[in-house]
Image (cartoon, rainbow, N blue to C red; front, side, top):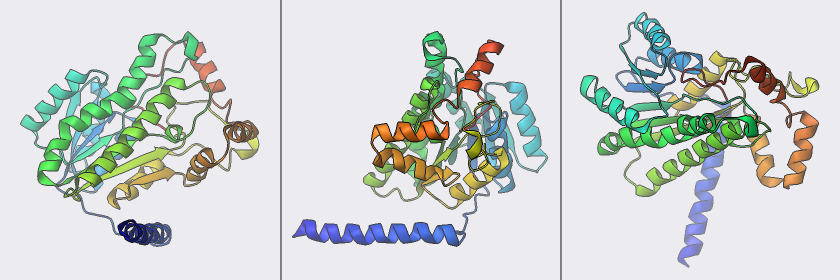
Length: 319
């Protein structure tokens, strides 16, 4: 009898969740104020990270900016300070666990306890799998996935102690479905999505932590240059063009400030992820080939091979 009652309650909660999602698409949700919050952004030296910093600054949050490029990071801080907002910069290599823990301790001593964590930094080797040095493959996984564990372990305890905080994971649609020639990136982003979703489940299951919010951001390819040359079949490029960085960040900010648990940008990417779950594997391959998505990274890889330099930095981020 108890299981029937639980089933009815679950169906009621499910209906409410669906209705809320529908309402959110029609009526803009009320956005929470974040003035006075201490927000840490990784990969803040450029790309999406710099834009996130400026958007959070406009909302009144004090900023802690992490990046491996000190000069670029200071430039971001300068732009933030011109808005009248405090910004604290730290140079760090996110592939090194102890560096993350040590820098987190410095932030607590010098600035205070972080209440909003935006895990944005990302890298990609940009080489064919069998030709790619192991160290670059490992770096992609360390920065894009493993660092999420270490960052969260460093800052979540205080959030739990105060029942207040927000953790944002900037993942990718390539963490929901895949394409060829970016095995390291896809693996790292699937890991990022899995980590974030499990963390969200853990916080909910533990109970009494309703003041800690989580938002998973899964953007399509963003026009930051990280995947320069990537393109699908010409007939469909206008339907799903690369995202403009500012549009991507502003849509992400609405999701974060609206306490949305997940956002795909553009929304049509949710359909692609759903088809992967519902259709047979062979059907997905046929669809990918039709869209030209199976070889969309080939021009990008070719360009990087010609340059003979991997895309591996802590301040350029795309989907």
